[in-house]
Length: 351
Image 1 (tube, rainbow, N blue to C red):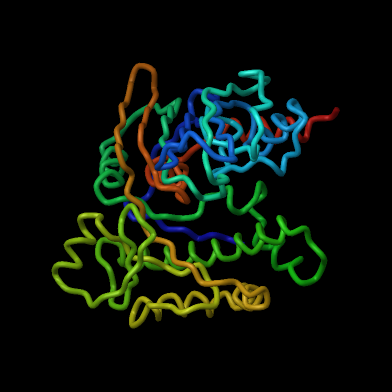
Image 2 (cartoon, rainbow, N blue to C red):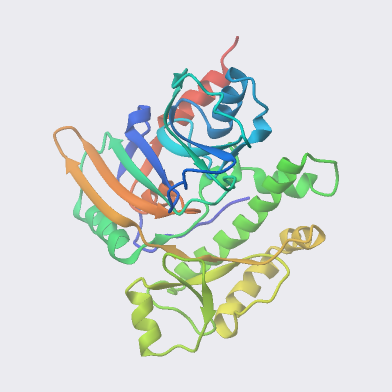
């Protein structure tokens, strides 16, 4: 099912190669707090490369004779990257069983105790260092798009990874949900893909019709740096806060619940939901619960440097949890993800 996305700063004319090496894509997790130093849970600050987060947990569990269920994590970090993140290990009254500081594809940099298990979505943000290669020129149009992202944020689309390797999670969800028994993780993935698709459609519609630089009547707003939402009548003060990136408009992650949205904002969503009745019917049957997600994201500590001789564009930035750096990049460059191409080739090669 086509995403039919639109971007607020015009058509992309530049291209580059992404993830030539793991060091071209560095990700560091920021919990927003420091482990307390005592408690039943051992927090592990781990650097990894060539491993997904769940693969890392399985490897640590196997190498230390531990059940994987004892481990917790906040974010799922990319396999084809150099990443640093926290894991937790439930060890009430026990010393750390992890004696090796490193293994194949990982290094344990710190171990600290804490009183709570690490759960998905706990961390506050991720910091990124990205190197894009074969960036043969930086035309004025592309530079303006980058500067627009820095000043006005970027459209908070769910990234390609939300929709599966073949970009067919929505189709698979509609074909399988309610028609066959699925593992809980697969069912959750499919329901998430359906809600993400609807959100993307609402956001794309608002951009196409010029509802980007300013809010519309009936919007629900989210405060920058928090998940607090509120609704209020539009006035000069509210519009000024919106333009300064202090607040952003939200759209629904479809589900049952009290929606504060009204007027034009509500009508835009309902039109898109009506166009995708097969999806909303499926979500209704599975009792999805309403959540809100901001339509745009501000990148913090944003900096970039173009090297014409090396044909590289390097970026440093921080993003709140739940947003995608690949979505930010989509606003000004068409990416060739060579790590993905390599994975696909490896999978289809004869053994």
